[in-house]
Image (tube, rainbow, N blue to C red):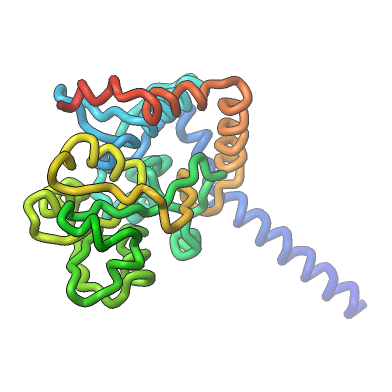
Length: 268
């Protein structure tokens, strides 16, 4: 009888736990459908993933992906512009449904949020003061206290710089554009950041001022982030990514932003 009572008590506890989990489980997909709007958080300063055009509109690779996502859900799209240093807290406090802002999937971030399957692999590269082109051939040549190098605050570029170029003097900037400007003005020797952004910055502002060491020295998967405890939304996102890769939509969006430079006319 005692064994039976213990068994029943354990079963009851499991049922209560399961019921509580069901009550408090997140169902973002249902919320999006009920609201009729997909809210996407991003910081529009990371070319070509998200940026602001001359009309003040947010455009970019991630924006086109979000538009396709909203279309698949049959809802409207709302872009929520958010500062980078507060973008994960904003996601966690339900300011938007999903974070699509060129974010690198790291183990540290994954302790706080869930990531969908990565959609692109990038790496850190070096924008280098032109005068140093003959002596600095790779990131490792910058590992000297005589050099001042920089990246953007709170990014994997900052982490990679501190980890892999520890002997150089390091400073950080709030935005990518500020770092590129300071390099062009000769205030720093090198700017470390994601390869896609650096390639565009070089073509736009680098002529005669800095060079691009375009061999990435890290490998970083970018992925969309959502709140934890929402397996249905995560499943939908992974299946969405598979589908747009199967039907060629992903390739068209990729070519538009990485193989064609027509969009540059919208921001110049």
